[in-house]
Each structure stands twice: as structure tokens, then as C-alpha cells.
Length: 261
Length: 318
Image (tube, rainbow over all chains, first blue to last red; front, side, top):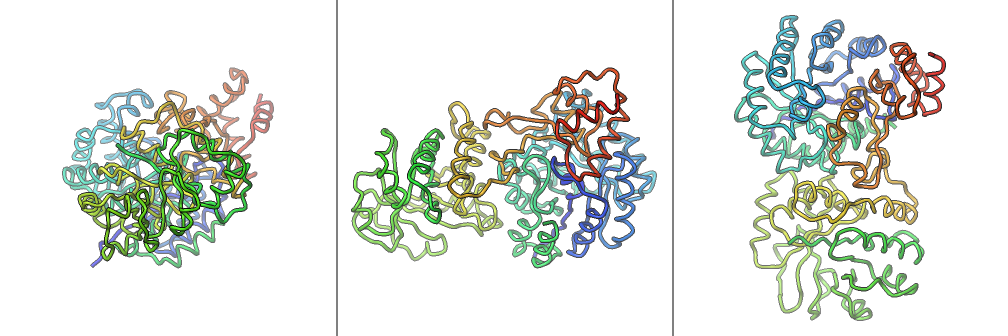
């Protein structure tokens, strides 16, 4: 039997935030409907902290999509999460910048602060009764033992799903496999792999992650996303569907590509 | 030691390229750190109709038969289909990966074998397959195809596991591994020395676009025009603090530039950074108001704002 893989589409978040792309509310609803029709497991609907128009779009998507799980994206602070709570999504996703470069230079904090802040945010969202997933941002450049420590703490809190983000797209299939496998072995968390295409390896790395045991793969329609984009939905399905059960038909994937044009 | 064969000039036969454009492309491709430049017989004929090839470089000729190779003696090597048997010391035979098992290799006849294909293998045990191929006695070189969008990764894995010769083409033309992607990956993993930088990629890209009449996608890895554009507030904030937070390598390395784009996802920090870039003094500006107007405007226009449109907006808010 083929192993089951779940697609998490981030066209409306990572895709939408890339330069030159701007979706209207109607575009967003159409895209969400198409994703649902294609049998995609989860979609990242947006960033509620951005403001009223983003929230409106998320509400509208919730109104029309009943099967696909709807997640909202948050920075690592309570205020962002409060905005998400307002939208009552199925999943609250919190991004945790985890490389030292991100922690010390972008956030200008330290590892101790990061862990405390992460646990406080997760606690808050869980208290409110939400399913919480965490995203390790820049995981590919982060210290593996620190990620294992953080992942273990999450697991104890009851978090089940962890996104491994190759934020700057520097992984290769081999490095992907080593890191993802090690995180799964040491934390027992379900891994969601989030590729970027900076070396033209987004599809190959996503397949490598699946081979290493990741159950969730992040994609975008037409592979849009920051810089060189994310893993292209259609390309990934075409490359992987004969080895994995992806809950979606190739034909629908093509229809979706058409839709976005 | 890894030796890279650039076969961009073998993949252009379906375009009507002028000898002049081809020669220019050849000259710019020679600036990349590769070992061999491979070209089709028809490209070779066009090039030498203009002038002789630049000296001190190794050229390979991709031919369809031994006869065609005989017409152009003196090159560093010849690549030909496996069916075209004949005794030639410096020929490499091309074989499709699927037909490898029933191929008999005769070292007296040929220098090596080029594996073409392998595209569908990514989801298999490719590591073991490559190790097995490399352990066999034949001298193999590797030309993965891109049917499943994994050619660059396959080419990279071949090199990582000890494969010595690998074939790629610029922008992956001809359904192959992207030469520039492969070079960048090998460089970032310290497996191959790139002396200086890859800034000649911009020049090569323009030559190739002229020949094919097709523009390379703005988000194409390594060579896309817009890959260092950044709009989202969280990313701009990082880039301003330290570009390497959101860049895999500096844009200058590939002859590109980073630039901040104003749009729906720009936040206060992005707006401040853009005003600094455009040298607009920011102390008397209502930032929250400006961000709200900017987001509204780009939502209405359904696009990013140009620098002029943004400067106008700042004037309105002041």
C-alpha cells in the first residue's frame, strides 16, 4: 500500500506575500474552493494580524469551504494569535524562527527567550481550544539539537505537527533527509516539510522529506512564493503520485493550474 | 574531481540562432567554471563559419553518427548514440537509463558511457542506485532529465556520491539539470570551486533569451530577475538587519540586486526602509496612515506600487 501524504497549500500566505502577487478577496475564495475540490488537506488562509481585509477574506473562505482544514499564520506573539482567535480557524499555526541567525539578529533575543515565548504562545492558543501547529522557520540553518529540545518541549505540551521550513532554500535531498529523519526519531512529531526553490530542488527535497517520514508537504499553485517560490503543487503531485497516496487527482491539479492563469 | 560538461549548445538546434548570437553565447558560457563545452554539429558548423573557437578550452561534439564525427576531427571528444558503433578512442556513448542492463560496454571502442534519463528515480533509493552505478567498472557520466522536476537534485546527488562527470545546461534548456543551479548547489556545499562569482549568468541569460525568443521566468532559481525582490514586512525587517537572514547567498554573486517592493504585505518597517532607499525624510510622516493607504491602494490596483506611485502616496500623507 502506498504511504499517505497530506498536502498543505500555502498559496494564500507564502504565495500571496511574494512580490508582484496580489489577490483580491474574490481571487482568494476561488483559489480556496479549487483547493478544496482537489482534495487538498489543509490551506493556509492568511495572516489575521495584517488587518481587517485579510480577516474578511478568511471569514469568506470559511463560509464556502467546509471540508478543507483552514489554518492561519502567526508570528511568535500573543497579539498575533489573538487576531487569529478572532477568525476561529481550524488550526492556529505559529512560526518560530529557530536558527541562531534569526533568533539573535532578526528577533534580537536569545534561545532561552525563544523557548519561553514559544511555550507561552502555544499554551495560550491551546487554552483557547485550538489545534496548534508550529513552524520552525529557517530550520535548515538551525542547530539540530536545539530543534530537538524545542520539539520535545512541544510534544510534551500536546503539539503533534511541526513544520520544517527550508526558509532560504539551501537544502539538498540528502541534507533534507538527514535533518527530517533525525527530528522525527528524536521528537516523535509529525513533520510537515516546507521547501523553497532557490536551488531548483523544491520538488526533489519535498520527495526526500516524504521518504524520510514527513507526512505533510507544503505547496503553492504554480510554485509562487518568496524569492524563487515554494514547492509547485502540480509538479509535486506529478512527481510523487505514483509512489504516494496524495488524496488528489492529477487532472484536478491541472485544472487548478489553469484556474490561476 | 568533479568535471562539469555544459551542453547548452547541444540543446539549441530547434531554434533559428544566428552564428553571431551563438558565438556570443559561447563566449559568455566560457566564463562559467565548467570543464567541457559540448555542442551539436550544426551549432559547431555555424560557429566556425564565423571564426575559430576560442583557444585553450575543451570542446565536445554531439553527433548522430561516426560519419558526422569524422567530418569534424580534432575535438576533445564526441558524444554519440549507443547504436552508432565504430572504433573511436575518444567517443562517449549515450544510453538511456532504462536500457542499461542489456548494454555491453567495450572499453576498446569508447571512452565512457553517458547515462541519459533517470528522471523517474527520485522517489526510489537513488542513493544506492548511484552508488551501484559508480561501483561498476565502466566509466559513466550522468545526464539526468527533468521530466519530474528533479534533474538538478539528481545531478547534485551524482556529484556528492563521487560521480566525476556530470552534464547540465544553462537554465536547464533541453529538459535537463540547470547548470547555474548545479554550480550554486555545489558551491554552497563546498563540493566544487567557483572562482570569483557567477555574475556572468545575467549575460548568458540575455543571450539565451535572444536566441530562444522566450523570457526566463522572473522567479527562476539563481537567474530569475525578481528573486531578490522583497515585499512582506517580516522579510524586509530581516533583510535590513542582515540580508543573509532571508537570502541564501548575496545577490551580487549572481549579478543581481536586492530591492524592496511596496505592496499589500508591506508593513511599517518595510515602508521606512523604502523611504530611506528613496531618500524621503520620514520624521513627519504618519506611518500607520501611510501603511493603511499603501495596503488599500495595492489591493485596489491589484499590484505592487512603483517607486513614483509610492513617493506620491507619501506626499499625500504628509
